[in-house]
Length: 192
Image (cartoon, one colour):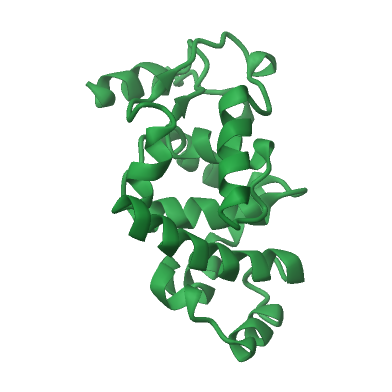
């Protein structure tokens, strides 16, 4: 019997694997949170499958999302990235990734970890939504608007409300698997 999953996963093995193993699972490691922040920003205007196909390229280009190293990227690093076919070669998105690494470190210094900062918006507990179908899931929420405003105030960019909501979904701040998806209950049980 085939498992019932969220319709957006489709039949692409990469998307199915991402849906089944990662999306919506609570993430608390700063390195992984930084990875998703960069990838979600890179995705703006593109499909998530486009980014997933380049994920290994991003890991290589951004030294496995080592925030300390990315924050120190120089103009020559930037120029190398602009010629790296393994990532989205968008000038603003690449500059944003370097800038966001610098801001990420400031948040870590202020809060002890980015994890403590970002999960604080949800009182350090995943929000368990109960959507019946994909069409019910919003592109942004009051909470993603609040997070977006706070991140922008701190100097981050490519963190609009829609990008923030996609980030929240990816790292499990919200569980937006539809109710009849097998992952919905798995994630709730993981949280206990």
